[in-house]
Image (cartoon, rainbow, N blue to C red):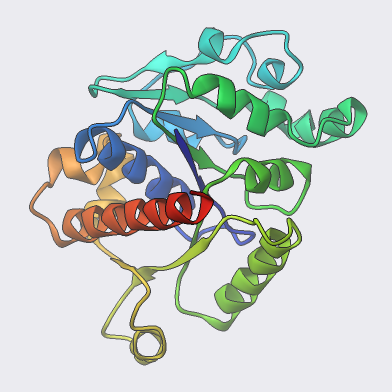
Length: 248
C-alpha cells in the first residue's frame, strides 16, 4: 500500500482536480484498488466523482474513532475507485487533533485501510496545520501542484520546509507545474528552468471535470490533459518504486 498526498499551501492551483484525476488513473491505468480521501472541507473530491455524500457519517468521526473509515467510504461508478468524502466537520478537525494529541492518527488509519486499498490519494487542505502535518507523516510521496508564478514558488518552499521537518526519512516530493499556458512568457521560463518537472496544461478538458463531474480520462481519454496526467501517474509510480528500493 502507498499513500500519495496532493498538497499545496496555496489555493487555486488545481489541487483537488489533480488529486481526483490521479485517483482515477491509479484505479483505471494502474489497476489498483484506490481510495481518494478528501481532507479538504470544501468537499470537491466527491463532487468531481459524481458522488453525493449527504446523509453519511461525519468525516471528523473517523479521526475520533466514532466511525470506522469504511462506514464513511462511498463507492463510485468507476471500478476499483472509492472516495472518503469531506464535509464541514473537518473545519474543527485541527483543534480536535490538538486535544487528541495523536500525531500519527492519519498514518495509523491509512495503515488499516491498506488491507483494502493498494493506493490512497489524500486531497490535503491548502493550509499549514496539524492536518497537513498528519498527511505528511502518512505519505509515501508528496505531490505539489503549482502554476508558474513567484507565489507558487514560495508556496513550494513552505511545503518543502514542512516535509523536511519530518527528518531523514521524509517522503520524496514531486513538484508539478500545473495550469501551464505555453503562450505566456513566465510559464515558458518556468518550463525551461525545470525541464524534469511534470507538466499539466491549462486545458478546457480539465475545466470540464467540474461541469461533467467526472475525471478527464473518462470523457476525454485522447486529450492532451489525459496524456499528461497518465505520464504524471507513471512518474509517481517510479517515485514509489525508488522509495521502496531505498527501504529495502
